Picture 1 (cartoon, each protein chain N blue to C red):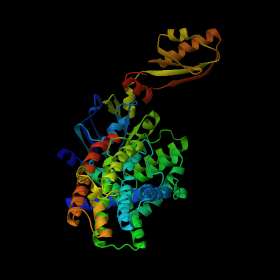
Picture 2: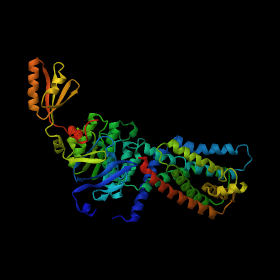
Picture 3: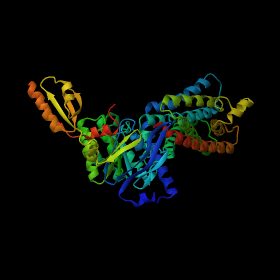
Picture 4: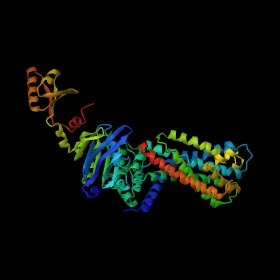
Length: 313
Length: 252
């Protein structure tokens, strides 16, 4: 703990954290650190332990073993809660209250002075495009609007750390993009962001580092680009033919490790995309088949994620 | 560094914020207010109509019924409602102690119960009934309001997010209590075993205070009524906080 307090560059420190529900170990002795000013992604399949970890870090649940600190304060304490803002997966504003009153309520609970609440509420609601509907009950808001409202509510106390649990799930493209841009702005203002998500693109685009959790255990922590090197060499060639190709032939190309049919395209997984393309060219020229589309893809974060958590379902 | 006293003051202020939120969301609805008044009144009338009873006897009983039913009507459902709406999770991640959230719910229920209980008092005054000890009546209403609100909060400590389950538990306790607390039958007319049971009901002591104040006589002394009500209030509040602290994480 003393070490934590002396290390001013660390925003979150988790050490040997464990949480059990009866016989199920939801979080199993995980340890990691998040640096101040970082956007840290927390990825995992359903039931991996992401939300349990966030709940412990935000003081909603208690750990059975281990310890966690937020800005040097033990999680669950008033001081730790005071410096954090939380955006849970389910928008949980008070739907009977207007957007404005929800902002006021959260401001008062966090002990923000009244004049600051007023100024900050106006600024934040304008920022998330809700100011014109601030006096309407939150139950009349769309899902995207509710999600933007709880983001604004989480920022009313100007927290140092923001915990975001699947913040863009189920939102339309515009709302998702708006929220992501806002996260980047907040991060450039120095806020530390802890983001749990299923969406690989979102994690790839936003996060400086990512932790991948599976079955309660962290399997990898690193920058997205470095995580992708887990499956270094495993490229893919995506191809669409003018007419149906011989699946057997595609499998017989020596460089191809596996073939997957995705809609009207084939994805060929290979360590040598160049040679694979040459083999394909030979195949189509002999049979006079037209290639309508061909694309060579580098390993994606999603590929690395699937590889790390032990394959597809 | 915040001292323990300043933390308690800060949390007391935030409990009031929670109470204001509860009043605005759960108590300020027309049907809730009307139900709070009409239900005990009709229940009481079903007993009183056709019997030759004086208003001096009826008003203390009505006051006890109204305060008991209103102070325990909404508070049992607040925790399951908030758990269902996931707003409880929001409160738990905010800089609030768990006792602050529970105390806020109790305060809202107390305010609602006390405000509604003014109606039977005014009805008594309108019927030219003399209040012998107005100060004691006010103190009794305040104490009983806290006591019944805390009792209501205990009902909701069961780790269920279904308001209907909680309301059923609440009704199973509340209705028998009404019949053994000297509301319909004065404690003096109860059989010995009935008297013994009535001693464990906090409503008996408040009804007794009300009888002292409206009829000029009661079963226990004022001192006993006020002390026992105070003890019940503290006991129920501590129990409500302890039980909720245990069950609150299970609601999430």
